[in-house]
Image (cartoon, rainbow, N blue to C red):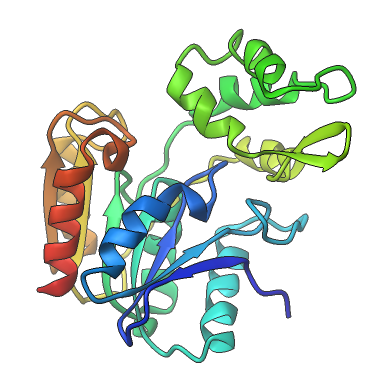
Length: 258
């Protein structure tokens, strides 16, 4: 049984799993995790399969990722958790809330809803594919190449956190780009016909300027989650936890501790 890599912060019998987004890693959430842990939680920052320091596998699906979470909880001897997921990680939390709702106390879904989305990552993936590590030997050179595809400097900085030295003279990515590239063509999203099984408290946070969640999606959220709260986060887009961290943390911690 393969176990996901994790960074565990805090020492409490209240456990929170944080699920990162596509092309991210658990450590993207380290600053937030420390603040949540200080409020009485043990926070598990997981690297999902084919991401970060976790194992690579040709199988990349919500079903396999949900199985990874189940195996992780068994390995850590944890029976029930709170769960927070952003973007693809939010989609995974939604999937888990339907497949194995009994393992969840509360869920926090960040800037995603249970519907099909168009592929929003094509420029990013094409840019990452264009980086040839036989020719590129520095972070600056990788950034220069990626900038032809991704104009947003902050997004490039987020992506290039995945760079590491595979050997003394050769860089590489921590994520499994080939598998993620192929999978992204099929859209990394979920749609459910029947109401989702989880009946516990759910908090949906979305960025006011994000194009992932709109007010017309509220009806869909309430259809699937009978115990949902929805909060629009001001001055923020898809990365609302980075755009407006104080507001995000206040709402999240209040919900988890309520």
